Each structure stands twice: as C-alpha cells, then as structure tokens.
Length: 456
Image 1 (cartoon, rainbow, N blue to C red):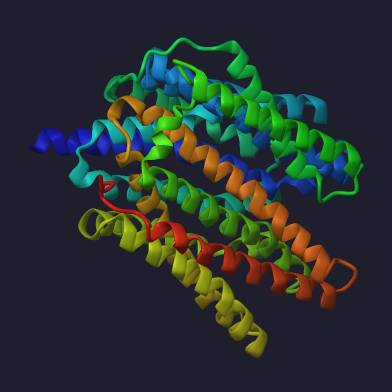
Image 2 (cartoon, rainbow, N blue to C red):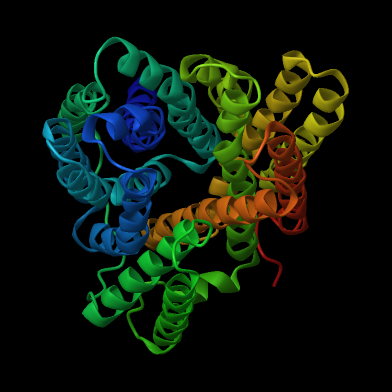
C-alpha cells in the first residue's frame, strides 16, 4: 500500500512539472518583453510575435503531437517534448537577434504542445478513479504556481540579472524532470491509428491561421488580410471535421462528442478560460497604467487571484472526488463570474486595493475549483484508449477559449474605452470585467449538464 502511495506521488509531481514548465515560460516572458524590446531595438509590432508565435505553434501542432503520443507512447512523447523545450530554451538564451529568438520560441512551442496533454493523459491513465480528482487538483495547483512565480520571478530576474536568465532557469528543471520521469513514469499507448498527413496539414494550418487571426484582428494591421486568413482557416477547419466524420482512423474521434459529459465539459472549459484570459490580459495593465506601479509590484498585486490556484486547487480536486464534477464545476464558474463582477461594485465604490483583492480571491477560488472538476469530467467520459486524444481536445478548447476570450475583451475595451487617457482606460476595463464575468456565468449552462454517466 505504501509503495502505491509513493508511486502515485511521483506520477503527480513528474507530470505536474511538465505543465509547470510550459506555464511559467508563457508567464515569465510577458514581464521581460520591455527589456527584450530595448535590447534588440525593435517595435511593439515586432515584439508581439515573440508571444504570438508560441501560441500559434502550439495550436498548430498540439493534436499532431497527441496523435504521436497515442501511437508511439505517451511517456516517450512527453520526454521528447520536455527535451525539445529545454534545448530550445538554451537557444532562446543565446539568441543574438529578435529573429533567432522568435525561431527559438517556435521550437520551444513544438516541445510545449505535447507537455500539457501528455502529462494529463499519463496522470489520468496511471491513477485510480477514486484519487483522480485530487491528483488533477494538485496538478492544476503546481501548474498554477507558474501564475504566481512567473510575473514576480520575471520582474526580479530582469531587474537584477538579464532577460536571458528567464530561459536559463528551464535547463535544470528540464534535466531533472527528464531523468526522474524516464525512471519512474509508466508507459501507455492509445489507439494505434495510422497518421493521415492530409489531416495533419489541415489541422495545423487551420489552427495556426485562426489563432493568428485572433491575435492580429485587434491590432492596427490590415484587417482585410486578417479576416480573409481567419475565414479561410475556419473553412479548412470545417473541412477537417468533415474528414474526421468519414475517416476510419480519425485524428479527432467525433464519436467522443456523443457523450454529453465530454461535450459539455469541453464547452464549459472553453468559457472558463475565455473569461480568465480576458482578465489576465488587462489586469496587469490596469495596475501599471491606472495604479502607476512598477512591473514587480504589479506581479505581487496579482497574488490574491493567482495564489488561490496553489492553495485551493488540491482541496478542490478532493472535493470533486467526494461531491462530483457537476457541483464543483458549477460552483467554480459561479464564483469566478461573481468575483469579477464584484470588482465593479466594490473597487469603484472605494478605490481601495483591498476592495479589488477580495473579489480577485473569490474569482481565483472559482477557477481553482472549476479547472480540476472539468478536467476530470472530460477525461472520465472516455475509454482509457482515448485518454491522449481527449486530453488534446480538452487543451484545444482551453487554448481557443483563451484566445477568443482575449480577443472579445480587447474588442469590448476598444468599444467602451481606450488608451487615450486614464478615464477611457478605466471605462474600458470596467466593460472587460463585466464581459468576463458574464462569460464565466454563461458556462454554468453547460456545467449543470455534467453527470457521472450519460443516461441511456
């Protein structure tokens, strides 16, 4: 019995480290962008590709990487992903131009695209159902630690060392994770389907095109090109789905969506992260622009929101095992939505940071509860042989939720406010917070449809 506990702990820690690495890298880079821009003497328009290329590459290759993991082994692909990510981090740190840095970031994303879904699949496949919710809660908490460490550590590194060190720190974490994961993680495979390169091309181009369009539609670039690219990518995505329906070995088995838990869980996930990332994009800017604080202080002011992921998520995971996915996911979406809406009433009435910190804590509790609940709902709704593909689909919904949520909030911000002065920024920020809150509350429509199993 003791041996099983040790093995379970090792599995949880080693799968969580991969998720942590990919999460902290995306967070820590945001605090170093100004230093990188000054170092390479580049414009903001060029700089944005340092962030965009990471998400675009992950969107393009995520399902391809998952399919490889199902075919040749989830552990094997997980280790390859961490190795690619770690080596690319060295290239990032040694980059002498923005072009080399962007290319290195793209290589990083090739590794990162399999780290999260494969870690989820390994974790879910390896652990019994009765502790799966708790395990996913710990997994979310360790990954969520990146939201705390990322902004603060990034600000500290840039202030005391140089931006290159935000990539060097991946080296020891990557080496340690690869060594112990190779020795302690169990191997598993999914359905050994033949890879269809036409489908790979369709999903890669359509996913990358959609994310690129969402990333650029709110900028001052030519909207005609952006809209054409977005619509063409959407049409290609529809064609991809049609091919999945008629294929005998689909990359995305559409039969999984016949299960109500799987479908509703993924839609609720989409809305959960659309709400969260919309706020995440604007909240640091709010502290920097309206509160006039430095990046390190802004990172610290996010702690009431982000710290709850580490504190609450493990307990929320245990609550999922005890009370079920439906109750915890619904309560989580409700608390996140209400938390955001309370910011408008409490902070605007007092102007006190405490009046914002308390609602942020409530919203963070909601995210910490809904995340593990929806993960368990989605992954428990499929047979073990489909766990890898289910993890990939879940992460696609999470990724696109974040991208579309951010785009919606930027559009809302520009409609109701702007950056011309502090008053316009405050009005736009209020509109964003209300929008994000309503998106989260809308997710309840789908979370209340989660059940342990579909009724025949």
